[in-house]
Image (cartoon, rainbow, N blue to C red; front, top):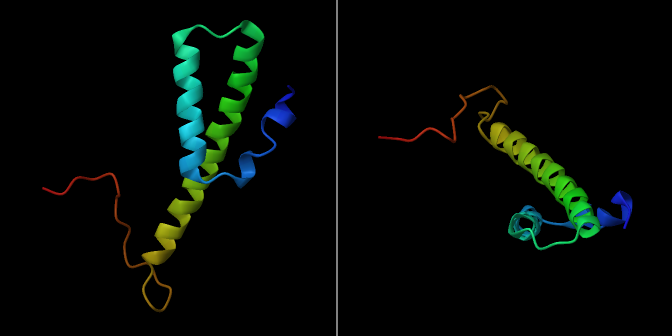
Length: 86
């Protein structure tokens, strides 16, 4: 399976579906019971899935930043989504 065919359906996947597939690939590769050629194919697909997830996360972050603009389009502040409130 070429890298192109391994990644052909990835652009249509939701973030959750892509992440689920990536987690499955990682789990199978970590078990070490996969033949070398199949491992390479899985690694290629996993790499493409990771890139797709990164792209979707960047798009979501951009949307969140836009939401935080006031009604005139001025920056109303940026909330750090990783910060914990005490």
